[in-house]
Length: 224
Image (cartoon, rainbow, N blue to C red):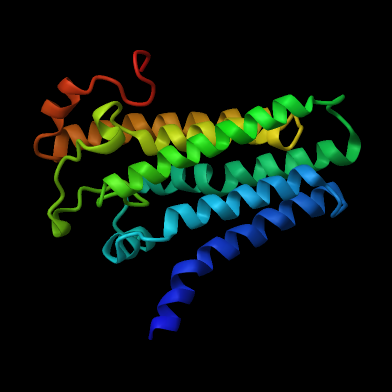
């Protein structure tokens, strides 16, 4: 039973890595692409950070998407699958056909640092919020309450902030300016999802409106 639970827990990480690797290496037409391996390493590390030590009840909640809003399922598809795949494939084609005329190693290093910080913020949000679901829903069956600890004392949707940072710096990790186009589209979907989720929580989650008065910003402190 423990072995089966372990497989269920870590299988999504390896499935995600396989999809990422296929998109990157097939579009690039080569395996000897250091930037791609860096991104895969980062993805593996962040996947472990999001998974190890997570509350089993939260893990079960995150695997269930049946109760999510219809509009949210579309946005999840864009932000979690379609958007990232578009970034990986665009960057791979850029690497194959040399559309980007060089990018400094300093830019790549800065992007890796920013990606780690973004992933750390998302992991912190997950550890602080036992209601950190994969879909937008008020979890009345789990006694959903407003979370104000951890990063939630500074911004209302820190997980989305971390995701946005990771998405926007991925093109720089892969050395592709062209990949910024799908990255910006994917991040725009995250921003839209933030707006819709915030509105839903204001209407349906007790205490959220008062919390929103105390914590004014949704994604970026002092900005929005």
